[in-house]
Image 1 (cartoon, one colour):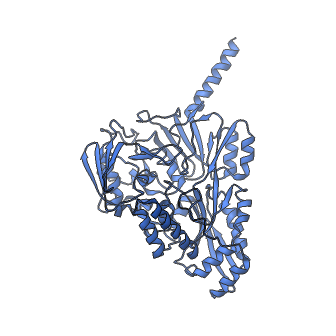
Image 2: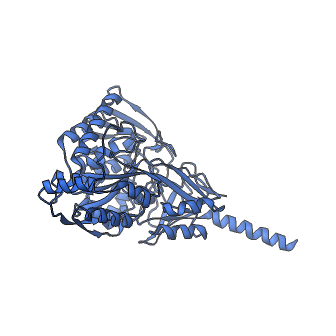
Image 3: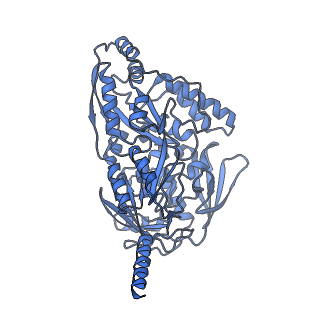
Length: 526
């Protein structure tokens, strides 16, 4: 009897310890701990999905907009004035480096938005003063004024109608920071700490970060919303997908991000694991920097599109868990233009276009390969080698390069590359989030338009589509924009992939986010 009690006690202790320590094997290191400064999913998972809240959010597992730090809102008849009623009693994080003396209020909203919007804001230039989402989506032009009506009511006035405004407000970059924390850091001349030692209102508190190794969070006991039973959340940074799988099998991790397609079948057979999957709202692509020769030549860009055997990449890298991409938006999103014709794989056509461009003997160039596993490209190095071999067949000699993830993103946004593997998972379910954010003229300076391509006809389409609420008009404009994109070929579109998430069987409450993020707020371990 005594032996049985001891066994039961040990089992109970192990279950409690497991529930309190949840290890997430992530694929890379974040580039910042403030979601205002990032666009990549790796960084968003470490920040917005864990530490912060917005005025509005997305219902978990959907793109439906729901209240968050704003309990409700009203929109004026002319759709230019949005009045947000703020939730009362919300506490900012108490950490070893900051203890708040007041609750969240309207001051924090104005501080957070104006940091990005107003160039004279005392925190605007902190950490470089670059806000890729906010600037690339031209939110600064859209928002005319942010005004406090009372401590729990904020009014945002727009310069023009914007059909995407509320969805954009729910995106990661609109997270709310603590104005009180900012004031304390300004007084201590440590402003940059706001982006490195985060304070938010989310379900988890930041504890520590060892670069390229581990991020530690703890449960926020004062969190205003519902949450699961995770006490300590640990991000074990593990770039190799196969190593992530091994850690999951040995229970070193309870959840792995971006499992390798080659491991999916084995994971599904393992009774201790479960695998979830869904159609991804994503696109993987090869970007060509049109500001650098010879990619300023349309014929060269079209030749590269013909030279790449995309179907072979789907078979070899995605193991069939993807479809060939012909448009810069996935077929699951409204306004997708199915009438667009893709560039057929043809070595002959590629060679003929290069000859017409005066490059019959080809040329030498560089391609940067993705250093982390992403749903839209699970193996950048292997894909790079396949692309390298395809391009060699038409006389283009490619040198493959890569960097760690934060460096890769930084150098790419500055336009240092010639050709670049990249991809995107939609953030709000709107075509604008692909077409304008990744290819609009306004996104060149912000850094998310990696091709540095600015086509005035294309840009007019996406800007006009954003500033009307008529869905039929928006659809027609976006379909026309996709035709222009395909003709001008700033990218070679590669794939739209299926998304997989793998976890221990006793992980409960996780929902696949169609926007590509991993959120553990409501996760429990049984």
